[in-house]
Structure formats: C-alpha cells, structure tokens
Amino acid sequence: MRTPPLTIAILAPPGVQMLDVSGPADVFAEANRQTGREVYRVVTVGAAPLAVTASSGMRFLPDASIHDEPDRLDTLLVAGSPDLANAAVDLSVVAWLQRQASRARRYGSICSGALLFARTGLLDGRRVTTHWKVAQLLAGRHPSLTVEADAFVVRDGPVCTAAGVTAGMDLAIALVEEDLGRDVAMAVAAELVVFYRRPGGQMQFSRRGAAAPAGRGALQELQRYVAAHPGDDHSVASMAARMGMSARHFARIFRHDVGMTPGDFVEAMRIEAARRLLEDGQESPKRVAARLGYADTNGLRRAFVRRLGVTPADYRKRHAHARA
Image (cartoon, rainbow, N blue to C red; front, side, top):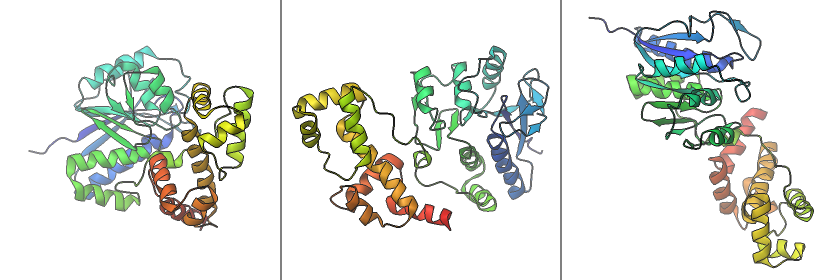
C-alpha cells in the first residue's frame, strides 16, 4: 500500500517574502526527486481566496485559503513579511493557525513569520528564532519565549522555527533529514547548491551598525570617540579618567545610561570595525587585531566568534569570494 504524501502547508501573509515560500518548497520538491516518489506535497495558503502580492511585487494564487481545511496536515509553517512587525492582527488567521496546528505533527515559522505565529500562544515557553532584525521585538512582545537571535534553525518539541529568509531552506533541509535521513538531506543540499548545515550564526549577516549614542551628553561624546578610535586604550580606568570620574562610578553610570557595560560597548565597536576591515580584504586578521587594540589574534578571534559565530579568517574568506 502506497504511503500518502506528507502535506506541508505554508501560510503566506500579505506582502510575503517570496523566498520564504519558494525556498522551502524547492527543498521539499527536490527531496521528492531524490527519492523518486512523492514524499511531500506543498500547499500554499492565503488569508483570502485571492492572489497574494509578495514584497517583491510578484503575485501568485495560493492553493487554498484559511477558509479551507487541508487534509492530513503534517507540517504547518508561517512565512514572513517585511510588513508583519507593524501589521494589524487578523484574528481569523490566528484562529486558523491554532486549529490547524492542533492537527499537525510539527509547526512553526520562517523569518518574521514568528511574529504572527506567536500570537496563537502555541510558541509560549518555547525556544525559537526569527530574523535578527525583529528578534528583540519578538522577545519584547512575548516574554515567555526564549529567542535565540543568532540561530539559523531552532527545534523545540513540535515547534520548528527558522531565521531570516534563506534560512527557511535550512529549516526545510533539517526537516527532510528528520524524515528521510542524512544522505537524502545532503543530496538535496548539493543539488540546490546550499549548505547542508550552514556555518556560524545569522548575526554574521546583521547590519545594525553602531547604535545611536545614549545617555547624558558627556557619555554620548565618549561613545562617539570610542566608535571613531576603536584601537585606542579604552579600559574602564582610562575612560573614567576621560570623564573625570572614579572607575567604579563611571562603570555604574555607563551601564545605567547606555544599557551595557563599558567593556561590552568597546568590544561591540571593535568588532564592527573589524568587520569592515575584513570585508575590505586588505588586512590579515593578525593586522586587524593589532589595529584594534587586541594583544594578539586570539583575543580578536574569541570576541568575533562570541558575537558572530564565525572566525575572523572565515569571515574574511567568505567576503573574499563575494568580492571575486
């Protein structure tokens, strides 16, 4: 007796990021080709029985709408949209998600789709990820969630979530591996020319830059100076002397006004400067470390890996390929 295909439903909200839908769909379709049988059936779902206009301007007609009830739902995913952070909550969509998730083996989101799915309450108390740009917003709106802002893919029980945009393919490959094994998942990744498991975390792609200076005027001037001269001596003692304060009082005031310790701020400024130098490709990690006030390359490496999940050498190499 032939096993029926596993139905993967992808909800596409208005203004959906097209790759959040097409990327996972291509992974599941390739898994079908690799196995020579229809293991998966992907169904796109819209909020209404109308064409959906993606954020790119492309339009497509979903296979179903939230007024339909898909049969034998195996996996339910919510795609992201650049508009979701400020979009009004459609309670009929939330109710449909709650109803369908109760029938699914696993459910979750791609990119900013977590902002919508979290409205259902089904992610409460779970570990999740989302696009780095909205991770803080998601955590603020739903304090019970543990938002792993650097992760590409997070699984927690039936919940499966992916980071920004292309990470939807990382999630789909992980689900294929779960269902069909490592060999099939690796074959799918090879055919689509994507990582089977992507190195590092998504924060290596973040582009927040330096935050606007915070706190009282003198502290803002100090922050601007550190950002402009990241390689100088920025020990707590030297910064406190520059402010005319004791080291202890300065550290307390800085943390209160800026929201982080002086050491964390200096490290953030140095890593941002290191990224720019490594992306330019003219300087080695050793030279970058020396320019930014690190005693040796290991100091830069530890800070870089801690914040971005990759080594300075790998980061430089990756951008060398992009320049080429």
